[in-house]
Length: 355
Image (tube, rainbow, N blue to C red; front, side, top):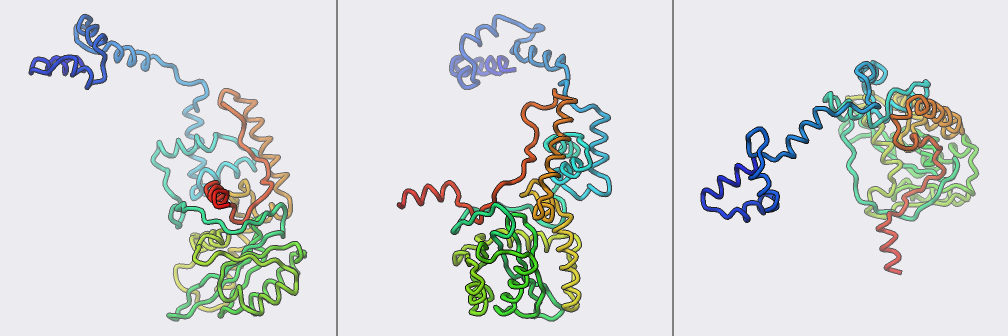
């Protein structure tokens, strides 16, 4: 094909050397093609060799069989798993002692079957630039809490209920919550005091992070934190993602399939729905940031045993079919530490340059 095009251009008056340069073919190769023929045609012999080798190439020994592929498709489309993404499916199967294929293989199968779409009600996440504030480190539960308030709609225009939520950033557990019909620093202080008591947290070793809203910085809340010896941490003004843990939690809450499509009829209905969400989130939701264990398991330390069992499942699968593993097995080691708004590499470089 290439030689034919070049010869046609030369016949029309073009220079052969210039045509070969434009086609990315050396003059020497072009002369060889002119003197050789493949099946009587002026073609690149390399193309014929490539197609011949491709046709005779054996399938990889570690390729899934048709039966295994069908098993994967049947399982991921079954009732318990059809609304979950592969990164949720894989750990759930590992907890049952089952290994079918890697997460990337399941993604590839779904993509080939045109079943790879963003599942659930929420839109695909959008990554934004980092704008980190002062960072705090958590290496165990009840060291760093993040909290915020979000609106819950009511049938009355301009009137809302207010959901107060406190999250432990190390375990992602919702440690305290309440629904009120007003925003007030007094209510915030009451919820925080009750949460400390319920969690038996040591206030002197606790950091409480929030944004700069009135209930967060109100006099009653500030006095309560000072009295208990809690270190208060606040987002920088105008930086929306400085309280990312709470914002992410609210996003999960409001895009749950069970989230009501109509406003809450009364505050009792709102409190009932939030209570059921918290139970699901703490005890059933496999959180992607903590190796796909539930916040409750992470908070109580049961994640160590769960992750060790998953590691054993993967080790056994690799022993059975080592040809399907090009490197180490998936990392199921527990997350050792969690940082509140860790600085990005670029931010650290800027800070060093400024210093």
